[in-house]
Amino acid sequence: MLALRSASRSTASRVGLRLKSTKVAVLGASGGIGQPLALLCKLSENIDEVACYDVAPVLPGVAADLSHCPTGAKITGHLPSSGAWPPTHDKGLEAAVSGADVIVIPAGVPRKPGMTRDDLFNTNAGIVKTLVEGCGKFAPDAVLAIISNPVNSTVPIAAEVLKKLGVYNKNKLCGVTTLDVCRANTFLAANQGKHPKEIVTVIGGHAGITILPLLSQVPGTTLSAADRDALTHRIQFGGDEVVKAKAGGGSATLSMAYAGYLFTEGVIKGLKGESVTQCAYVESSLTEARFFASPCKFGKGGVEEVLPFGELSAYEKGWFDKMLPELKAQIKKGEDFANQ
Ligand code: NAD
Image (cartoon, rainbow, N blue to C red):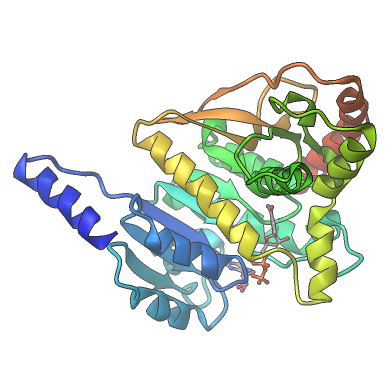
């Protein structure tokens, strides 16, 4: 990997090209998701700098640890500057996000058994609001990828915060729903006795019944009604399997780090000029819900097009109708919080 990277860099310098370096900031980098996500970014051929930021005192150690991996990406570690308030005075956050192309935010608390993602709202809404204020001030052009739950509400919070700062660009704000797509691909492949492939489109939001996998659109797959129902339910509530199995130790971290890395890579490839299509929870006018996870075409400007998700089966339409009021209420909850 290192050799390949050096080869392409030296080829570039021989022909006199200047490659723009790509910086990713991970906010919440000491956490269960943040650490493996930062590691995967450190291994990426497409990323030149990974800035790690967290309020936990272990953060400098996490950054030092990552920095010993012999790959090309530079690691920097940042704690908040002491007593920094409001967050727009935080020199640590400023250093972490300044110049970032993509800022991934997995900061916040995870679920414990019996909790819904919405139960995290009281703690995580404030964390996301604070961090996004800093992003809007110090890195207004970056693509923000929000992982902190409840995503259905934290993305609207981020949009309202950025709007107030006068820097909101709907093409550069995404909720990360890639884990739902990963689960859909994995569970469907297991059902079909096949190797997982990237084939399922998952729309809606990122919580329970707002997650809608479009299994009817998977080419070459016919499911019995029982299998379809069971798979849909498992994809919608797959996160609960992990929360229950971790028995109070948190929610999905490793699969989420993988999914967050896949999403970040897709965004970066787009920024570098490749056309990449992946699902994300973004603002669009496709449905009555202001934010809706849909397949999106990513390019140099972030989300370049939100693609229509095609015809739904009668079964999927039933879930779509059931989901919309719930999703709209969760969006409003986020907007109201940011505007109170
Ligand atoms: P964690 O508790 O292990 O890590 C969270 C990290 O955030 C901690 O290191 C903490 O110090 C840090 N943090 C808290 N407040 C901060 C602030 N103001 N600034 C910077 N860092 C701060 O939790 P986790 O398991 O990594 O999960 C993180 C979030 O991701 C949770 O909200 C969880 O629900 C969510 N999640 C989302 C998905 C998804 O698909 N979008 C999947 C799994 C988990």
